[in-house]
Image 1 (cartoon, chains in turn blue, green, orange):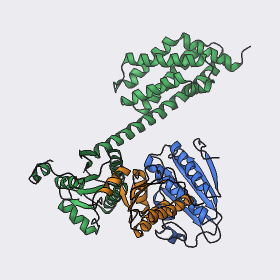
Image 2 (cartoon, each protein chain N blue to C red):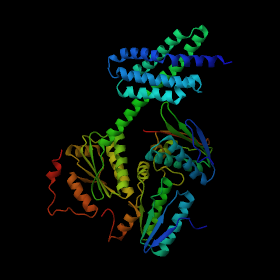
Image 3 (cartoon, rainbow over the protein chains, first blue to last red):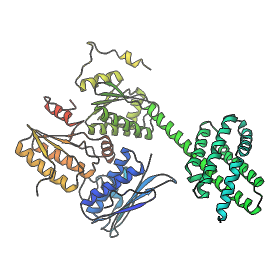
Image 4 (tube, rainbow over the protein chains, first blue to last red):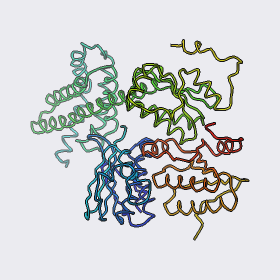
Amino acid sequence: MTDREVMAPGQVSSLQIRAEEDLLAARHAVRAAALEAGFGLVAQTKLITAASELVRNCYVHGGGGELVIERLVPPPRAGLRLTISDDGPGIVDPDAALVDGYSTGHGLGHGLGGAKRLVDEFHLDTGPGRGTTVVITRWVGR
Amino acid sequence: MLGDAERTREEIARVVGEQRDRIVATWVRTQEITLAAGGAVDGDELREEAETIISCLYEGLAGATPLDQVATRFPPLRNAVTDLSHRWARLGVSATAIAGAIFALKDACVQVLADEISDLGLRLDAIELTNRLLDGAGLLTFQTYVDSREEIIQRQNRQLLEISTPVVRIWRKVLAVPLIGTLDSGRAQIVMESILQAIQDNEAAVAIIDITGVPTVDTAVAQHLMQTVAATRLMGADCILSGIRPQIAQMIARLGIDLSEIITRSSLADALTTAMRMVGDVWPVEEKPSESTFSNVP
Amino acid sequence: MTSSEIPILRLGKILLAGLLKELDDKTAVLFADELSRQVSTVGAEAVVLDITKLEIVDSFAARILVEIATMARLLGARVVVAGMRYPVAITLVELGLDLPGVETALSVEHAVNMLSQPGGSRDG
């Protein structure tokens, strides 16, 4: 169980997304890391929510995958970087997927576009047949 | 038999212990000259600083901390050095002068070591080790200086934001937020968070955002205001926007911003009357409140 | 298995449910089913959902809340979501989710007061 693991600065931890329960475990892991990194309440909530959207996408659309939590320390700034990846079918039209309202599954279609607005940096790497990798970063004290 | 390193260390400790007064005197003299221009630190203080640091250095040399880490890891010396940096930084002494002070201390030590150790090899080793040790201390002052400046900037930023976004409870379950000055996106975000937190803490039903003192409103700021109103409603409270001056109203109209979802009132007084009605209270006096009593307040 | 493990209390014509811990998706769906069944059998006039303890409401949870509200309205009941924490509210707004059709209240107490007032809607 990695969700109570306390990370030292610069440390990386990872979590497999294989079952429905892993969605909660992933949220807990991100919350613990966000607390440890010194995020304020609002920033923490935004980051956990973004992670929740992406991890759900990874499980529902990508058939499961991995969440990597990376603690960034100065220089230049302190922050948290999350990488969510799967080997699923990938997204055919990534640009359309980022527009609000686009959804091929459940939810209100705010998964990707919404998650993007909740973080400082957002990177999407996907294509038909090559899975989906999303890297999000949020800096402390923005 | 002692190892070379151990012997060097003992020798440095001996010399520093015996020649403490001389090191302090030399150092105070150099510092009085360098700091004279600013006049920030006087001679007695300098003597005290020097004595503290030398004592800690002596303790550190006599202790078990690895020699090259005495400056950075031995708590008393580390604290003495960071304390000095903090205090001098607050007095306005420059980072260069503070680091310079530690390097001057190094020179003073090296000078007595050169005079007091007769064995040439031992003397060189002692000087080299002392150099390394006090260079570490010099770097430490620089880091401390940067940290303390950073802390001051952060604190002032926070104070500035707190001053500029007072959230006042003006009636039972009614909050008022008079905004003054330019709202940029960053500040609007903080305003939004403080309003919402105040609503939660006070279980307030209505928050009045008064923008009488805001010179301009652009699309981004209007967006933030609308987000604030939306978030307020999600929490189960309401928001009233007051103090929209004619120029601002024009600007909002010209930008095509739709504020129709938001309750707006021209003055804070009107907004308060509306807010009280919303929380189920009525104005305590019979006649309609005189607007001038409120709008004349600068 | 039909129970969602979330207790639903009945106060006259009001159903009160407290979402006390984070919901996984399955529990949320089961809860919505259970709630609609109860609204119908009890003939409830209102549903109060206490979300004071929820630290996260993502798009899935928001969708469930909207679905519950829509379903309840079809069955003739109002839905009041009470006690949303301010970071959750900010996050939802930034996600662009404003819970259409869902009434809100500062706390369960406010929600019950609001419902007991004649024609008592918060917006007057």
